[in-house]
Image (cartoon, one colour):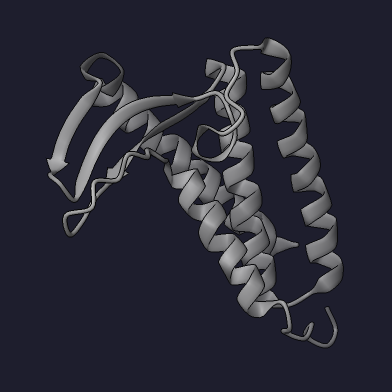
Length: 157
C-alpha cells in the first residue's frame, strides 16, 4: 500500500506544483504562450474539457462532473486491483496512474477543465497537442503496469 500511495502522492504534488508555477508564477494564463526551447518545448495554455486529446469535448457541466466521478471510480478500482495483483513495480505504475488521474480530476473541480500547458515538437514534426505532467505520469504508469503485469507478488506481502 505504501508504494502505491507514495507514487500517487508524488505525481499529484508534482503535477499541481508544475501547474501553479507555470500558470500563476509565469502567468501563462495571461500570456497564453511562452517559448521555452522552441520548437522542442513550448508552454501553451489550453483547457481540456474532454478526455484524451480533447475527445468528447463539451461545455456541459454534467459532463465535467461525470468525468470527475469517472476518474475517482477508475482510481478506486485500479487501487483494489493493483493491491490484489501485487508486484512492486505494478504498484508504482498504478500509483502513477492514480495520482495523474486525481490531479486532472482536481483541475476539473477547480477550473472546470484540465489545465494543459506542455507542447513538444521535434524533427520537423509540428505537434498540435498540449498536455501536462499528470498525462505523462498516466502514460508512463500504464506502460510500467503493462511491462510488469507478469511480476510475481513478493512473499509475505
